[in-house]
Image: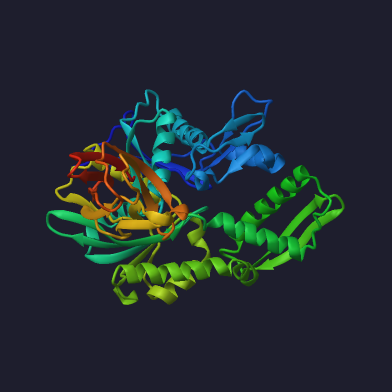
Length: 492
């Protein structure tokens, strides 16, 4: 049995790098809200200058960014690894968390306007699987700052897999599925084992990988450079403001050309007076575009090989590929997936722009008890990044490696490297580099009251535990000093 409450729904929001969407659970499944222009997605853009009382958000902000790019921020999702950095728009400064909260609030308010007495139970917000703990925490903080009741955070490929599961509910079979998520700013690749038994539907993450600096924005920038070169545009001598305007205009025509080249072999690009006395009137072919972004597809090719190897599978073991994200519509993605995984395995019956928001609302309905299936939903996750501590000489000492199934627990014994120290800080990190400086610090445990001993004479036992909800519990034990300290860190 499924039940619906339009005035008190449970919501799912896909907070995208370039576009966002919002969905609710209904008795017929997930339903995506439309804005007044009958569009299902909103631009993840914020614009502000001193002439305004408050920032503009969404599609109108995107239009203003073409006229005044210096006072607009696009792609703030890529800045969530440092939620406190300053972004100057007009005469004010904002943080990435504040900018993200504005986008979330704007998306939410469009849904709110559709129904009198709108009072949602709560919201699930999505993040890339490859996000670190800090990036996920900052996203959750942005949702809370927007005034939303956060039921949970869910990784985008898990949400997409849930949307697929609902869509295929009547014909689900045991299979290995790959979620190929290529959005505006990030690339996520996740392999699941999907199992459908009499009592349970299970999504088990076998391996994941990705790049949080690879997506549609990079394709647009590469195509803009190609257009600039073919049109022989000369930007020398321009002021910073003039150069920003020209680059913003180039990014806009690049985005339009990229979308046309997804279904046409060539397109004409005509832009009068891009500079005083200079016009753009050129033809770009799909082959030229694909050549301009070839380095990104080579990187994706390597990531596909890596994630299949991590999952201990062969290409033939993958039964289905689910494409997610607007950039996955580029024909080159079908070419690379057919070559890597095999033809006729790409599933195209869910909307790549909307399935993540739909899956988030499904997960929200599951958390809130809105879905009363005869079957249990079981989501088995895995670590996206290695977890460990800072060791001597700036080295990353890994306790739990990446792609380890959760829940799990690992204990290692360390020793002091300083004579007679009575206290120390144990820095906790998440990442993939052997050097601490290239990874993300997710917390610090301060230990005091150590017995004074020479370096190497005190053993310190450190245990990392990760539960099914991706919460990390870190326990530090030093027996001689009668110390036992436990700290919790939320990964998603």
